[in-house]
Amino acid sequence: MKASGSGALCDLPSVGRWEFGGFAYGTEPLVLPGVGEPDGPTVPSPAVDYTGSCRHLAALGRRGLLIPEVAPCESPEELFWFRWLTGHQVCFIVWRLIAQLVDDLAEDRRSSAEALPLISRYVDGYSVMLLYTGSCPPHLYNALIRPSMRRRHRAFSGAWAPDYWPIRDLFRRGRLPVSDDADRGELHDAIRLLHLIHDGVAARLVADGRSLLRESAVRGPGHGPAGLIYDAYFTTLRAPVTRHEVVAQLLRRLVAIAQDVAANGLYAADDTIRTAELRAAEVTKFESGLVDILHGVAQQACDLPSPLLPSSGHGGGMSR
Ligand code: HEM
Image 1 (tube, rainbow, N blue to C red):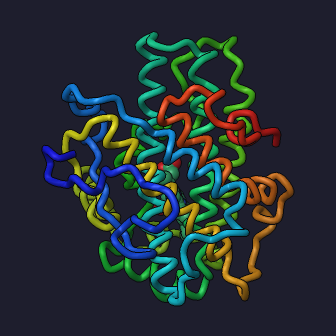
Image 2: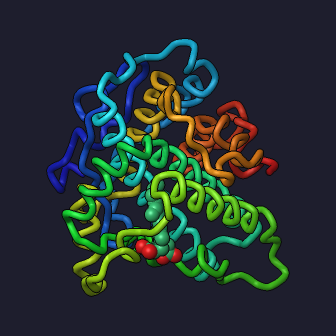
């Protein structure tokens, strides 16, 4: 990242205090390669040690609620703005990692037996990010967040997300470049749960679940401008960053999110609105393993061998 002038944004998070954004519940811009472009070339450098950050995440999952490392956030506006931005940025990284695995399948660099469990775990990561970003109290969503998107464009839509495009067919139709006899059971379940959670979050936050796009009388802009508007809203820039820089930006966000959930819980104490989808047993079970799932995503993105860290019992191996 130094090449693109954003050094500290890729420092690996160290243990025990809040670092992300410079102050608790601050936000950071995200820098990713253009969609469909490979990771930037890696200059020879000493091997990166991700284990400290991953152990920190694992510990937050185990004891986070007992020993929060940051004070609870006193401003709901600040907290849920942080979540909306940072949670979406994590989705963009996870979508990119999924798209790269789909490319690996298409180019025969990985077998389906190897790639499908990895994709499933990232889909679980996307699902918990939907719960996390969707934890905003509905009144605050409708007073603060939805108007901020509408100001960018009256028809602002999740369908404009550039990193989502390469995997849209996977999520909409389960389409993958694998043979018919590949075991897709786990991935199929993960995608089904994802849609259940997206529907549940949409209905929780917007009474009739209608998006700005569906509500709006104006047409969306073309594909290219829509992506630019979307990236700009979520402070996401495009530059040739390396794989390490992508993963480091993911870890910075996952640690901050785990610290936030440890300090504040997932939902505000007086927010009891849950739709039927979000009350489903499979969703509440998923919700209670949120930080463990993030830990699984981190471990996988770092290519850490599983024995190095205790198994979370979630993610790819999670039973639904
Ligand atoms: C919580 C964070 C959210 C994320 C990460 C997210 C993500 C996405 C993505 C990626 C799509 C494109 C799906 C596709 O093209 O196949 C989408 C579409 C859609 N989302 Fe969400 N979504 C979120 C919250 C919401 C909320 C709160 C609503 C409530 C209105 C909503 C309603 C919709 C609808 C109706 C669509 C279909 C396209 C459109 O009409 O804009 N989503 N979302």
